[in-house]
Length: 199
Image (cartoon, rainbow, N blue to C red; front, side, top):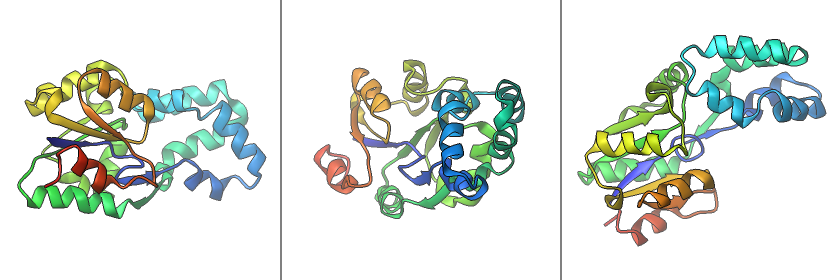
């Protein structure tokens, strides 16, 4: 079995509050902004937008009250990232040292993924990586998984997918992949061992 890692909140902690907790003094306003203007549906659109800044500019027209904050999401996006999830990065590198291919599958805007790769060297260590911004489709759409299977040359039954989103995990399982719904309390080493991905 070969491991496919999601990135956000599996290998690198990610949360818009990392940025907006510093830039919006009123917590109630921040929560309104996140609930109305910076929704996960909109973020998914930026993950496939050809031009991230244009997508944000158009969103700001729809939410003029939060125009400044939306532009900050583009200009200071790197601050939405937190620290690496060190124990999971260690597993990725352990697999590579053992000679086992390691793959990535993540919803990520192209320009922001390039910035993250400069910040975290382990994001350059995948044997193959499918990024939504590069292929124009986001998880949990089955099409992005089909791209993964073709790119890595493996059957779904040969792969274990690790993702923090239950919807993405369910989509992977429906296609025949083993999957781990990762949360901070999950012992990923144990879960991968149980699925035959760690010796």
